[in-house]
Length: 376
Image (cartoon, rainbow, N blue to C red; front, side, top):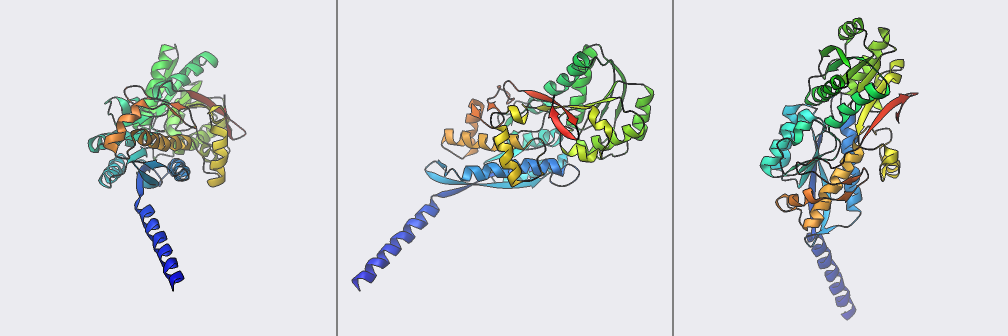
C-alpha cells in the first residue's frame, strides 16, 4: 500500500511538472505574405519555404525569451501579387497580433502594406521587394535585406555600356511599382552612359502576347531590350523574340526575371542565352552559408528554389535575433533592436542604414548557359 502511494505521488509530481513546462511555453507567430496563387506563385512558395525552414530550425534551438520557452509558428497569407490583397493581408496579420512579418514579395504590395504595419506597430522585413520608394517614408518598422533597384538597374546599364559596348536599347516595363522603378533606373543610367533609348513600351503583369510591341521594337534595330517585370512575362517574350528573328538582341532584366523558372517559361527559346539579369546579394556560392543552406533546402523542397528564399530565411532569424537581444517578443519592445542588428546570416552580415536599407548591399549579374542560371 505504501509503495502504491509513493508511485502515485511520483506520477502526480511528473504530471504537475509537465503542466508547468507546457504553461512555460509561449507560441509566437511570425507572418509571411507573398503570392502563392497566380502566375507568380513559384516565387511566393519559395519565399514561404524559406520562412518555414527558418522556423523549423529555430524551434530546434529551444530558445528562451523572457523566461519562457518559445515555439514559433508561421502565419502565412496569400496576396496574389495584388496591392489590395496585400494591404488586406497586412491588416489581417496586424489584427491577429503576429510578432513580426516577413514579406512581401512585390514592391507594389509591400509599399502600401508597409504603412499598415507602421500604423499597427509591427516590424516587417522584406528580402524581395526592391523599389527604393519602400524606405522613403523611413518607417521604423520597415527593413530591407537585399539591394534595391538603384543598385540593380544601374548595375545592368553599366554592364551593357562598359562591358558589352551596346549603344541602342529599347525599354519595356509592366507598369508595376517594381517593373517601372527598375526600368526608370536603367534608363537614367543608360542615358548618362551615352546609350540611346530607341523605343519605350509598357505592358501589364498579366500579359503574355508581346508580338506587336516586339515588332515595333525590331523596326528600331536595338542592340538590347530591357524588361522591367517578372518571369511570367519574360519567358513568353523571349519565345516571341525568337519567332521574330531577334536572336542577336541582348535581353536585360532585374531580379524579377532572374529565376530558374524562366528557363521553363522560355520553353527552349535560344534567346534565353541572351539574357543578362541582376539579383541583389552575392551568388549562392559566395554567400557565407549559401551552398550548405541550399543543399538542405533542396532536400526539403525539391525543385522549388527560385531566388529569395535565403533572404526570407535570414529575415525570420533576424526578427528572432532582435527578440533575443530585447529579451521580449513584444513588437513594441524588440523593434528598437532591429536598427542595431549586426546579424551574421546565410546571405550576408545584416546591418542597416537609418532608413532601414541594408548597409553595403551586394548584387550579382547572371546569364543562362544550357538553361541554367550561372553568375557572370
